[in-house]
Image 1 (tube, rainbow, N blue to C red):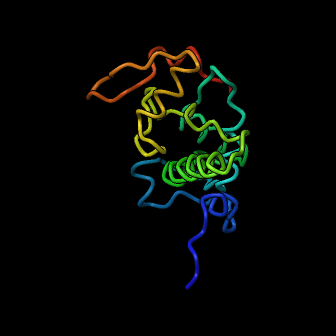
Image 2: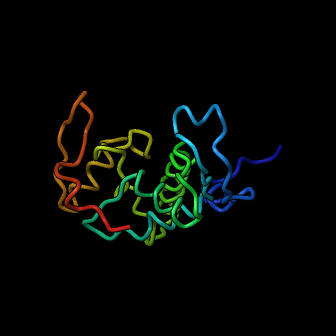
Amino acid sequence: MKRPKSWQEKLADSKGLPKVVEINDRMSKRWGVGTVCIPAPIEVDEIMRKVPRGKLITVNQIRETVARKHGATIGCPITTGIFLNIAAKAAEEAAAKGEQNITPYWRTLKSGGQLNEKYPGGVESQATHLREEGHIVETGRGKKLRVKDFERALVEV
């Protein structure tokens, strides 16, 4: 029986990505017209790694960065979200092996400064990391946790 891939292996497996494709009719209702860049997992991880302590980035900023890099209209929201989670789980996998230089995934927020419930340890773990770096985590609309005044800490992309 074949063993499942580790998160590190999934992060490194680009499967022919990145690629830029035309936004088709079905997608255009939601995303408009133009092209969409489907990033490689490692590309998303590399952007996340560049966010220094005390700073933040949103998934939308990552999507904009990927789109700009590849000359696309937008970065794919679905695959980018999936790859955020792969990067986070790969980072925790590396930390469990004693590695020190892991991707600081907790610095990547959802839109509106919301914390990501899909990250390892859920929003509680992400909130702990963020508080350790000086951010104030509060309850926002719909009782979702978010970083207060997150806009002030966003990195320039």
